[in-house]
Image (cartoon, rainbow, N blue to C red; front, side, top):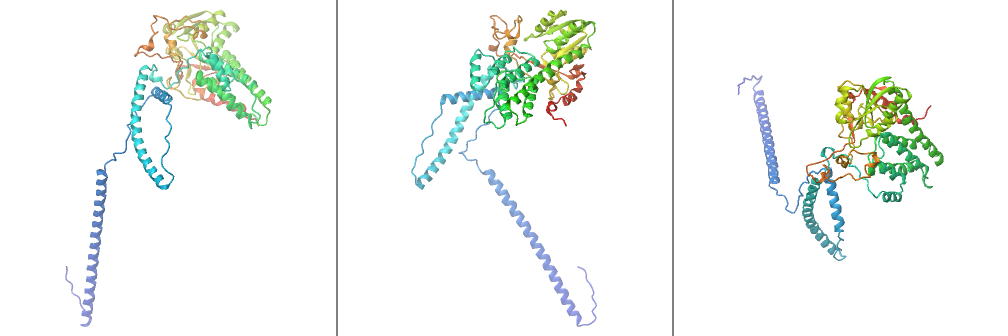
Length: 532
């Protein structure tokens, strides 16, 4: 927009310069016009694409769902007991229905007939889908009503519904033995399972010892098949695992001591030489079982008795024990009969097992002064007389917590609040590598009928199943018919490590914080590692 004065050297060069300047201006103007046209084209293309995308989205929204598709309703979330009841109801319905045979296909063998059959089958599939969905909805309503009825009749406490339900002993014990013989199980397996199931064998040591003795009997009477390639696999899968699974699933959940001993036996089988003769391998396994019982149970009990006996004074101690523990009874007997110490024992007991009566009988026959009380009188005695508390253990967790008979945690916590030392006697083969902080996730349910049985005149554990528990006129005789009443019978509880003064093992008296170190040192893998 500004004016410029240009001087030329000659008249002839002026017109040539003006022509060049005019051509340069036209070229620049045309470039500007072309750039503007391209920009307008880009804007136009973006607007068209946006309009097409908006139209496609609008068409999707306006698109209706097909009417021939049947969407089944969402299934409600069911609890474990309701799912089990639903499965049983479906099995019963399937057994009553008997099933229908498929209809024969119609049509000729030519291609046209095959095409028509395909079309017809497609239509039939659509109709069957819709009918199946309708039938499923009706079946769901029926099963839901049955699950609701079963939920009303369910007497399981919901907080412990994840635990396996207790197995009730039946009167057809001989028939079960004959059926297990047909399933290639030795008769000793269901016999021991019946003892587990009826609580005739109580205590971690007794149950583990009986299991190992039964395994020794099985090994003595077993011969691998002649066509086997590796007898170790055959012994593990055909002899050991079926017996252990039968005890665990059909009778009673195994204890930590049984699980560790079974792992030891499996490891002993796996570490055998493949080229060994079966008779030689059997002798090695039998010697390993005998050594395990002798070293890990018997000698361990003697060492625990020696270590814990040093904490008992020569005269004047009042020792409190709870329930029954094999290692604690041995400790007290050795202190009184072998060491000649004078002390008094307070035996605390609780329903429904009343195991403290067996402890009372053992100690009284040995001439040890005893006092027998129930758990509800514990607070009075703890504040007045007790000087030491000795407790048994079913398992020892890696964080120092103690799993024992239900009521043990109550005794330990009350003693700790009264500044009374609490010593727990536990063999190292009962140590578990699991960490547990409460008694809910890992526990065992007992028979609720034991809680309903209010008569305390029990002589021994084996008498509980042989007599009629329900009596006319008892308070809990008809507890199952009462809709708002549920009974809970827990077998174990967890004592926190803060309530335990020391843990007495065959290694010595250790604080609960050293259990993890002890677990690493007592690893069963080291028992079969070769030495250089």
